[in-house]
Amino acid sequence: MSSTASGKNGTWRNWGGNVAARPAREVTPASVEELTEAVRRAAEDGLKVKPVGSGHSFTSIAATDGVLIRPQLLTGIRHIDREAGTVTVEAGTPLKRLNVALAREGLSLTNMGDIMEQTVSGATSTGTHGTGRDSGSIAAQIRGLELVTADGSVLTCSEKENPDVFAAARIGLGALGIVTAITFAVEPIFLLTAREEPMTFDRVTSSFDELWAENEHFEFYWFPHTGNTNTKRNNRSAGPERPVGQLKGWFEDEFLSNGVFQVANWVGRAVPAAIPTIAQISSKALSARTYTDIPYKVFTSPRRVRFVEMEYAVPREAVVATLRELKATVDRSRLRISFPVEVRTAPGDDITLSTASGRDTAYIAVHMFQGTPYQAYFTAAERIFTAHEGRPHWGKVHTRDAEYFAGVYPRFGEFTALRDRLDPERRFQNDYLRRVLGS
Image (cartoon, rainbow, N blue to C red; front, side, top):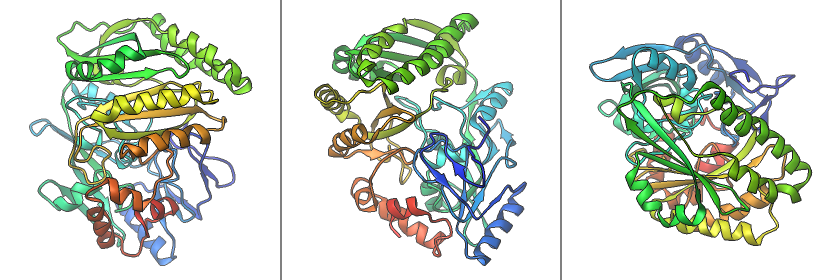
């Protein structure tokens, strides 16, 4: 896939294929100066402006009928400060390029999500996260930001400089300005040992607190229509490096997790009645394995089977109850779900609209294979999530609006007040932001 998901005749499409937009024009600035000029010109022409990353959001957060800013020329590392333990990168840099470049320098982010196709600004602006007992989302690792605001000026912020902007802009939803550079905290590269192991749903839910407490990074996947899960524990290791063998890696990560899984989903889409049987087989296909490697090779994996996703953050103490309700709902319904449900955690953070803002959090993600009707499943799941004061991922399917968010985010008003100040004319507005932030 190219860095941006795009279509013919000026139509932009996202990766999941569920969002399309027709911008009035597209601009690919090669410098911050060119970007500020594009914002000023849009204002003169009365057009809205939206930067778009790799199109990995399932919401229409990046859609616009105004000026679409493509960031692929704003890439690369600007500066590494080994003493401060930071790296400053251009906003359009794909996470994959950042991870590889940092590894070459003997450095790494502390935590990351499970794919690395997204741009750094797209991933952080929507609150992309992995799983961690003590380490948070990618945005929680930001130490400084540079953004172009609605009047075309360049604003820098950190804990010391414009701290009110820093509190909000780390996960800014594209509403406060266009991020042009990000400074991340990094550390000397380290090794992680991953332990992947099948476990029953009952065992993983009854011992969830211990599994969470005993591991730096714990996550699991539950296969609907079964009582089976696959668990993954990542912990720092003194080594030696023991990567997954090439053949074994190809078989498990490419053949089983992408190739056979793709075929299984095609079969399930054509014959939904076959899905519970397929689920039983696929939930037992992956055997236990242990391997040790550098962080990005352990945290991230290729995801070639296209899907649509909803993910909600619930208070960590509510995760088991929420999951059991979801399982009971699926069990008594006529739904046929071929994608596993993913469960991860994050510590509370201090970012205004972070899904983990001010509370220790667990994430439950539900997926449907691209092209299968997802509304019934997602509606049932969302009803359960919102009953637990769930906060939806900003880049994944949900039906919530500003009124709901004002209730689940104590600092919601702080964000909208800052937006009023930085973008009074709503230059960065689109339909999605109108719904989630109010007009």
